[in-house]
Length: 379
Length: 135
Image (cartoon, rainbow over all chains, first blue to last red):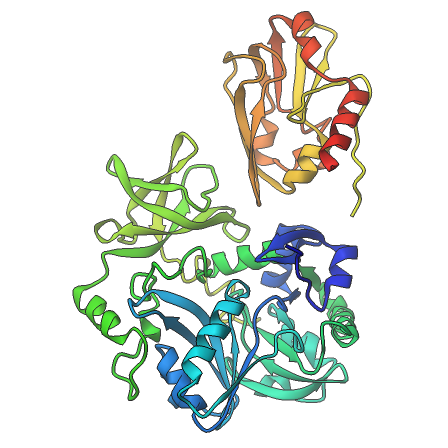
């Protein structure tokens, strides 16, 4: 199988350390995960996220179709507003999680995970048959990049005449950015303030607009110490922010309630949706296991698949783990049986043959929100 | 990205990317090679043995954890741990910045050095070993 490339591959192959991710040749880092991570927490960083999916849903029934597919209430979305949404299967297992933007009354834009691009598109097409709606996969003709960090707004403000401060969190606007027409949304996957930019009409075969915009953003952010960031920092940032990664923390075998995503399940919304009966039952019975955050007390880094122990036996498993640059310790997300999921409980993680001590902590986010993240106190 | 690795002459190497340096008093210093530190990238923890621990050639005696991965350390020789590099606890980045100097990991009093040296590679053969890994 040949690996796929994004619009920005020509930059990555010169400057980045390339790895295979979900079938794409992507940069895992440019300079290093820790300096890139810190650039985003303290200043600004830019990510290529063009490996993700971009799907248009246009037509009279677009809202009805989407409300049928996702657990959240899409009907309450105003034009130029985004919403974190989860789509489930009939058993309540998570098919994917993505942001849904409403661009106009009859026009929606979805951004699924890279690993689910084809699965989601085919699934949506299958369900779209009964609706008056046109579904188009535009992943290969729209480039996508994320500019994240406390100085993301200042950086992008230098290359647009629009007042970016007017775009509030989870809102979006079509603007001219660096000379190109783009949809800019105040969203991200790092816990920080920042934007995701969608550059229209940029085919993979002629990606010069994407490369040019990337360079313009790097130049604009230079005075703030902007760094191009790879997937390594993207993963460590989202983990520190306590955001789930599809395929690790959530998948078709996990339901939104145990993943602590119950807030996106609107059992009482007007339209029925796939998985509602199962989800109503799970909600009534209560989740048997829960996704928790663990901060290490002993040295060592928890990693995907490691066992979680308590009172001399295994009580769960790590789904995502790594080193937290902000906390300077190992952190993890993992599922544990409900009776072992209370904040402050001491647990152990089996790191190879050793049981290393840790404790259950608030994980959304792991860091102090007064110091880091989009809610931080501005100085 | 540079694919060039520093491989000093005069040291001995394992296929698992540890290096060994014979000191004048007959003890040996052990660390990981430039190739190993570049592959691991950004080391954040090192799990070390205790002074006095006995180790056997090719057996695991510790591990190095980077942001991305964890890798076992294999002893290049048999012997007893005489000293560990205590500085690595606070400055694991020495493994990346100076793998053959400040990034040394343990000092060992070897038991069968002459015999076991036959299982180690010199700089030239280690370079060939790295070349063979590229294919």
